[in-house]
Image 1 (cartoon, helix red, strand yellow):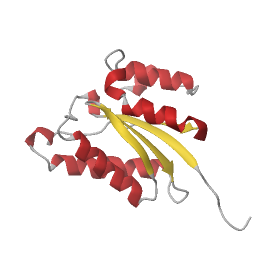
Image 2: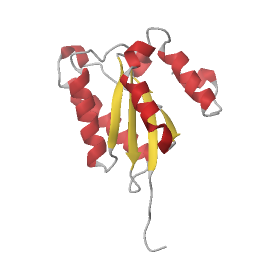
Image 3: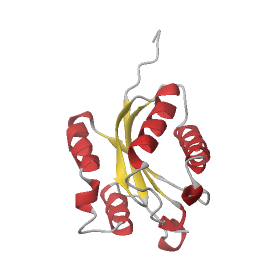
Image 4: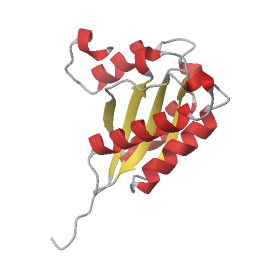
Length: 150
């Protein structure tokens, strides 16, 4: 084959360290725009970003030129440094070490976009940890509960 043809949609989920509610509604739009800029700069086209005060969801097309782990390293390190410049209330802002990343069937893109758009509504009924456990179950990811949250 003369060229590499790739189209990998990925739904990424990660939280603030210790799931602290540090993403205020005031900073949220600017944070999502900043993270979107990082993704786009790395040729990972952002489709939707959303979340709540303690976690974030990113739906993007993963570039064939970057490993998922490198994308997350760049997003987390740069956005964490950036948000700390936004005020004293963010000086202790950190992302958790780990993340969840799940492939998305192209026919399900609209479902995931809608899911991300209504995060605050979803979390009136279910907390982040329960939500994440459901993702792990849906995607049949084996895990040890004692290592997921620290």
